[in-house]
Length: 203
Image (cartoon, rainbow, N blue to C red; front, side, top):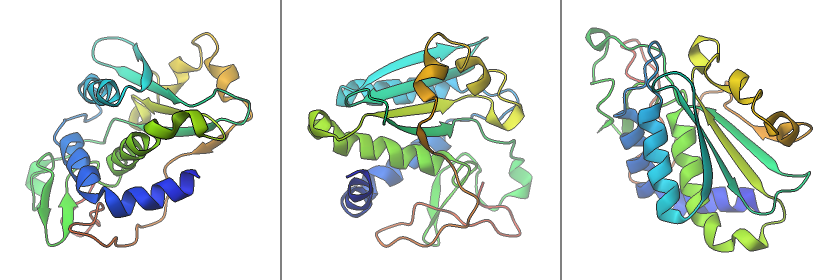
């Protein structure tokens, strides 16, 4: 069912995903210093809009993580894991504003377009699709969006696993995370992904 929803979402909500990705790119979460709270605040508002359950964990100033749960919580829950921070971008080395989320030449340009704000945008759009059918899902879904992946995860997954019950919740589960392959172009008004080039216009 989840795969079908992903496919359906890519066809029906391309505009929605594109706009979410642009919003996320425009929230500067370079690590250091991180400042992932900017994105967590955005995701929190999105969750409230679609009535999705969530918890926020903040370690030190502005180093926030968010966990979203949907459906029945079972031993077969699907875990979706992503990170909110990006590596630093030097605007002089880019042909487009790395935090502009500009659409040009059929691609979205910006730091995090590939690593990995596209993934966060797609998952958020899928959650919107799944919410009305939440009670009918075969298994629950737990989305974990973390801070500090680009710099050791001291304020992210490592700290989350020390929170009561979280390590047990994740143990033995199937996890979808970022991959290492180059994306394929998507049909629609604007592909979600921006391919890296010599001028580093994608991040």
